[in-house]
Structures are given as C-alpha cells and as structure tokens.
Image 1 (cartoon, each protein chain N blue to C red):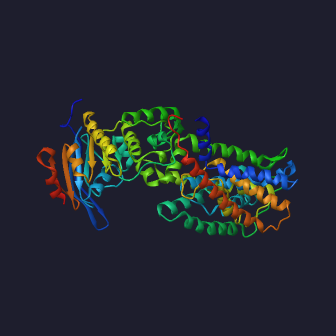
Image 2 (spheres, rainbow over the protein chains, first blue to last red; image 1 turned 60 degrees about the vertical axis):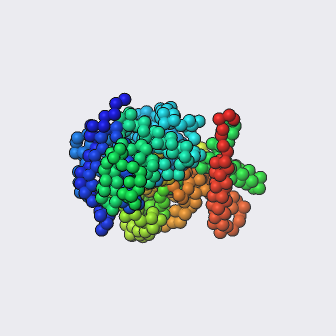
Image 3 (tube, each protein chain N blue to C red; image 1 turned 120 degrees about the vertical axis):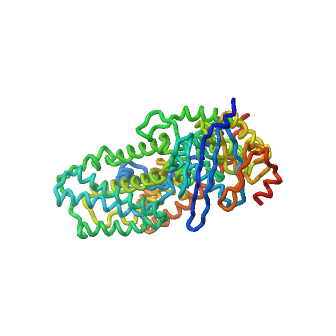
Length: 248
Length: 326
C-alpha cells in the first residue's frame, strides 16, 4: 500500500488546557498526515498525556481548534473520537478482567441481533467469531473467545486491546506507553505492529519513554516540555542522543 | 477436558457458593426437623419470599454496577403509602395509583443517582441520607397513620393464592428472568458489568456510565417500591414502619448470593438463592422454637461463611488452567 503521508488527517491548532492554575498545555500545534507515525516524547508532566487525552475525547480543551480530514470538529467525549476513527490504547488498563475476550473486544460497541436505538440483544456468535479473527490479525493465538481476560498474560492483554482498536478500522491510533510491562518479545511485536499500521494508511501517535523505540518506528518526532511543544522534526534530522539531550 | 471445563465454569458462577450452602442446609434441615420439608411450610416461606427477593434483586444489579443503596427499606414504605393515599383519599384508579407510587420510588432512585454520581459522594453516604429522608416523607405524607387498604381493592392479580403459591412469586420469577436476560444477553447488561468493574475504562471506551448507574439506581428503587406494594396488598394494611431494617437483609441476601461490593460481579439467580437462604434459616429457627434473636446471629454467620466460600471457589476456579491439549 502507498504511504499517503502528504494528506493531512488531523490538525491541532493552538491547543490550551488548564487544570485549575496549572497551564498544562500552552498553544500546542500538531499536524498528523495519513499513514504517518508520530513519536511523542517528553518527561513526566510535559503535557503528552493531556494532549492525547484531548484528541481522544477524555478531556475537553479550553482553547484552540481541531480539524479532522479538513473539517473543524469538536471532540466532546470518547464516543465522538471513536466515531471519527480515532482509537486509543490507554496507558492504564482498559480491560475488564472478569469479562471474556469477545466481550472485551466489543465493549461499548457490541454488535446487536436487533435493538432499539443504542440498546439491543448481543450478537454473541458474531462477537465470538470476529473477536478471534481480530486477535489473529494482530499475530496472537488465543484458544477461545470465552476466556476471561484475567487469565491472559500482559502481552496477550495488550494484544487484545490492539485488536479492539484495529477491529473498528480506525484512521488513527494513539498508543500511550503501549510497551510498559511487556516482555522484550512482546515489545518487539507491538513495535512491528505499529510499523505495519503505516502501510495500511493508518496514522499513529506513539508515546514512550524509550527513545530507542521511538527513533526506530517514528517518521516524525514531536517533543514536549512544560506544556509546550519544543521540537517537531523528521526522524532523519535527529539521533537518539540528541533526543535525550532535548528532553532531559 | 469437557468435565474440567464444566467444573471451572460452575465454580466461576457468582451464585455457586450460595447454591451449595442452600443444598447443604436443605438436607440438614430436612433431617433435623420433620416439619421443615412439607408443602404447608414452604407455603409459609414462599408467601413472604418474593418481597425480600425483589429488593435483593434490585440491590444485586445496582451492586454489579458498582453502587449501593441503603434507602430501599424506606422506599419500600413510601411507594405503598403514596399508592394507598391516592386510592383512599383521592379515589384514583388503583392501577394509576400504583404507577404513581412506583414513580415516587423511581424519583428517589434518580435523586440517589444524581447525588452519588454527579456530586461524587459515596453511595453509602448518599443513600444513608435518603434512608432517613424517605422514611420521614413516608411518615409526614400519611400524617403518621396511612389510610387502610380498601376492602374492595382487587389484590388477586398481585397476591392472590394459586394452589400453594401466591401470585407474587410469579411476578418475581418473571422479573428475575427479564433481569437475568438483560444482564447476560444485552449490550446494556454488558455495560453494567463493565461500569462496575472498571468505571474509568468503561467511560473512556464510550460507555455513558452515568446513564448506566442511574438506570440501576432507578430500577433498584422501583423494585423496592413494588415489593412494598406487594407486602401492603398481602397484609392488607400500610404502616409507616414498613420495611424498616429491610435494607440490611436485602444487602445480606445480595452478598450471600455472590454479588461483590467491589462491583462487576453478581447474578439475578444469586439474588434469588441468597434470599431463599435467609428465608429458610429464619424459618428453621421458628420451627425449632429457637430464641428469635438468634436469627441475626445466623444471618451474620451466613454472610461471613458465604463470602469466604465465594472467595475460595473463585480462587479454585481461577487455578484450573485449561490447556489446548487437554
């Protein structure tokens, strides 16, 4: 597939966010093209999480504008973002331990046999078959869609959450520290996976403290410090050591 | 492998421990007291059972969503009092009166929801406040003496006798089946479990957790109000102290039936079994002419034993690993 990296997908302009007196995001601009992998770096408290939480609808912005595929939009809540095709793999655990894999994949967006408005009867057959397919597609081999998530390993859980965001054919994927708590092997799998997104024309924002990972997979690297954007450059223009100095 | 699979899924059920204790006690009581296992005695147990079970059912669903309601005992009085005042003093049709009585319960549930969720007050505190307020409303609106139940009021459809049962048991079974279906087979049921287990994740995945919890609060109150109406129809009188202390019994039934205080775990069937356990223990103590004060001891012991057993069976189920080659 072609890398459509000249077509603009998301454009954030002059984003501002305050938490009480804390100015967490100061006039941040960010543009992401189709199929582009952005590595978002910065120390703790730099504003990375605030930025992505605004894009995925968890927080509302106080000032600024967001354009998606050229249209000015308002991301009121996570549902709006999901409907646009912005999927997020959060840093914290968004799995439901007691629930089956199939239910976890489809949570909040369950296929219905029939229903009234948003409520309806679950199409469990479809959930079981398609959740297993989605999991296979991210290179994971799990025995049954009925296994409760609490019985999976950390890497398998991350696989399920990636499968969840992939299934819904997202246009953009935000991964907030997706390799935390993963083994070396599992980490490599996630990195490979993010690379493959680009070839499918899916954009991604990859947040990590591991600058080697960022440098390996990102097309462009955006650095933040104290709520401001401090750098925005192509990977070829920089090295890992420079990045360390920049945010350190 | 099939048998292992079955054992695992059986042990994983939240109501498993309650069911095991129930069967054990059923056998024990049958052999220890010859008046226990006969249709007349079960008629006695089952005539009051639906009232407590409906309240426990509502509490269980609310607990699955991660919240809690201490005001159900007071709502249990408010609904029938509102209903009877409308029937007797305002001569409103009894169906309309009951609906308004249930609407009053629903409003209380909604207020509980708003106070708990919007103001981020623990439901324990919010509904404790409501316990006092709703009880006070029940006394004030009736002037302390609620109107008596009119003699010509049609009560057969709700509490009439069918063979050894009261009609109320069929209402209970119908409502429990619907609740069970909603919990297990609909997307809304899925959201209730998700909201209870991990509310932040549920919200970030697009579930409107306020709507989910508010619906559970309202449902819990309506079921408590409906149970109160059933009781007032059965005993043909309404008193302002109706349902006093019921909240703890209902919560005990829910917990014994496998509902978790942490949210995300529980079942409609568990609520029914939990309540039945409390009912048969109450009954055996009466049959054995044991000092009535032992009932509280028995309920307390039952809660502790059931919860310990729940934890043990759950851990055992988790340890059973199913491998591909088995």
